[in-house]
Length: 627
Image (cartoon, rainbow, N blue to C red; front, top):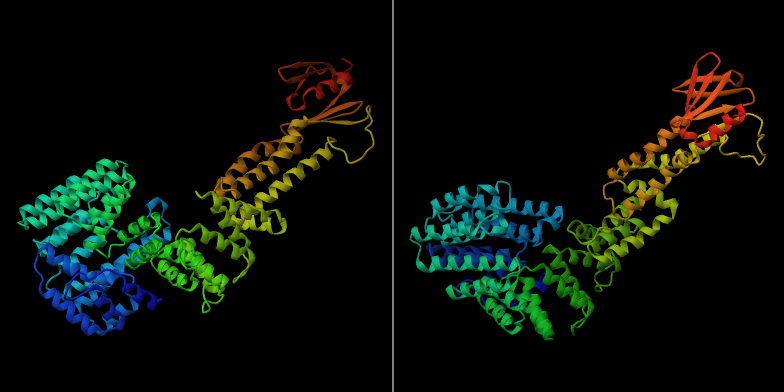
């Protein structure tokens, strides 16, 4: 992979500075020629002046260590060889800042996997620590302060930006770089405002910055305004702002925004011209070559598209790296198929934080079809599937679930597989949902399906208790029905004149019998299909659904809803107190408001609640008393 990266660097556009180029710095770092790095960077910083051109020249040179070709282990070796080197420490800070941004990704926070935030925070913290340590190693702390100002908004205490900015300006009041980075941090999408940007411009003018520097800051503000209007869908207004930014002071950023807007408005030729101009200004921007490649691909210029995708990837664009790998693996768009080279680009994309590339690496290791030296390795496949899943690749989630279900490369874990499939049922991608639903059909194999569902719930003891309740409550209902004569296990006809049990109405028996299994099955299905994600909600709804059944069964089991009659007596229970009446002692019976009132010779009255029994109880009493 390292060879592929170095070869790809040869096709990158020219240097940013005649004396020390990005390519030369990267080659020295790869060769571990730390003395050359110290000499070149030290000489470059010796010419520092608080002017925009000088600050940007030095800043852009250090970008060499924020590109994918810069390896962490090489930077660590540099720090070990020169522990008191400001350049080594600051280069490490630049490097870890890039690792933080590639871990964070460019997605909306609401759609970004927690693992990405955790990894990003780790790298941003390392960047801040290296930048902090570098302050004691130089009399020119402006670059370290600028980096700290940029990194701080991604760490706890980001609301301290005003204090940090003021402290940085104390060290170098005339710095254009500090003001430019402060301006970038005031974008509305990050909680800032354009009024606050105007304040930065006003303060820059009052501080006596050269007019060229103030103009450049103003042009960047216009470009941010254009991007803001673009995000809101106001493309024509955004284009006007981008054009003004370019006229005020041409920058790669403004040309990229302008190119995107021209493309959205249907002017592809002008858009490509804008992107090509942006590439001339800043050949290391990770978005410009990707946009160029999109235009070339749309025009059928496949060779140029592939070259631009490669340049974009080498500038740090993770999507482009994965795109190159996919083109080389699939052989589409006129690209000659080369699975082995595709593997290298997938590896780069994975290193840059692309979850799809991570999944592709897992596929290569699972199938062993990405080159003669890439053998089947289930351990590595599992590693990359897990990483892809953690970084938000649903394809990686499905592949990981399949390995757990099949027990490929690890002990079989049906519960984890089902849990992953259930998560995928809520995907916005219909294809992912269909695969998840299809895989959940494995649950029809009850020998594996039921234990898997219980384990996948996240609360196995409660899930098992729910299943037991779904089975036992209907069985209990049937047992009581047999006891009370509602259901007989014999085919013999009961004696109409003999003892009889008047049981509760059938609808109550059916309610007690049917609700637990039917409600439980419906709730399990809703959970398995992703309609109810949290199993605690399933448990709560099941408890509510079973409440009527439990009350009915309690009343039937305690005898409150049972009346026994024979030729001589009537027996029933009320509030747990047994009552035994002789028919000869009953003088009259009457129905009133769902109750049956029995008048006794002793002048007492017994009131039976007839609602649970319907007409059956009244008919029986009427027949016995010959009413």
